[in-house]
Amino acid sequence: MGGGKIVGILIFVVVVVSAAGGGGGENHQQQQQQKWWKWMSSTSAAVVNPVVSSSIVLPLYGNVYPLGYYYVQLNIGQPSRPFFLDPDTGSDLTWLQCDAPCVRCTTAPHPFYKPNNDLVPCKDPLCASLHPAGYKCESPEQCDYQVDYADGGSSLGVLLNDVFHFNMTSGVRMIPRLSLGCGYDQLPGQSYHPLDGVLGLGRGKTSIVSQLHSKGVVQNVVGHCLSGRGGGFLFFGDEVYDSSRIVWTPMAHDRMKHYSAASGELIFGGKGTGLKNLFVVFDSGSSFSYLNAHTYEGFISLLKKELNGKPLRETKDDYTLPLCWKGRRPFKTINDVKKYFKQFALSFGNGWKSKAHFEIPPESYLIISSKGSVCLGVLNGTEAGLQNVNLIGDISMQDKMVIYDNEKQAIGWTSANCDRPPKSSNMIM
Image (cartoon, rainbow, N blue to C red; front, side, top):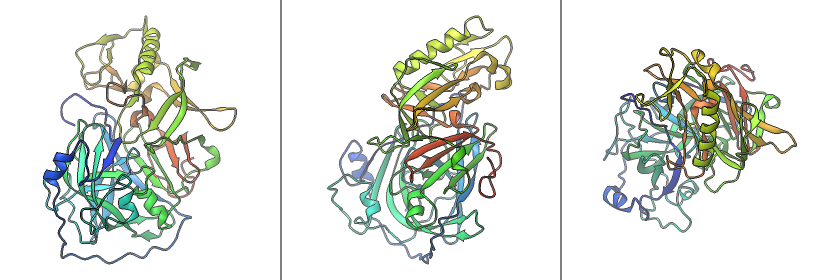
């Protein structure tokens, strides 16, 4: 990201509407929707045998600050080509910027994806999952999509099939044929990053992990481990952790089908705050964390009370994040300042009498800016357009393995060394 100002990255799907349907983007859709042409390229189908006792582990690159995002490399197509994608648990659809030709595309690290002629038809269940009930197909032979993100960004395109190249932890190489979006019209959002597209990891049918599961490649489980030093790893399947050593909480069944937990309570410095019944979304597509206005104000009040008398003063000349503090001299690392801040946590029910605590130490909610200030990586979600949602973003998931188990409908986490991807089952535990 250019400049010193960092905006929380919000790849957090609000609505998915058809490219031909109504809604707020109707004029944009009518102007930009184009008839899909068949290309002369061809690809051979990949035969997939059920191998559900293995997993896929992929390295992650990037950081919360100063880069502002994490990304993963996927190899797609025949011949295989590399693409850098934003791994987003807040949305389902995987899409690439696509030379279809491209009406509007943003700067990307690789040449735009060259589409094949294997279109997903409108009647396909995957296409239906992207559209409201009763959607009428304007072009039966193709599936148009539009996905809109909370930061104002969007992608418009068509769904097609292509091969993805994966190395399994068992040593087997798999090339399943999966559906992805060929995005030929992108509007960058407030938190735009120069990547080739988005890797949708949500709970819906079009999510990559859902598709891999439906083909018998892995269990319907996705997880990530983001290192506070940058990088980390992403995984599909349940063979890289010991479930008995994970803290679990049930997924909430919210209408948006996000990875969310209900009835969260804010704990500050090990004590209850009275801020309860919080609806919390886990979103790897967001750099920072967000609390709704009421909870945020309560959190800030507790934080400032704790800092009273400490050698820190609020600064107005550092615009990295909304709230920053200066010391007597510039800070170099979080270690210089974390002694002044308390740990907080979000506490959830876990189906038993005990509670599941998602602990957030100072290094998982603070950054040191380029000016040497310490800045708060927890923002006002209501101001950011998230209404009453509370969101755990990348900053607060650092140095934890976070697991979204769609088989058991549970979210789990544990402290972990995220610097080295596991080679086989349970190596990082």
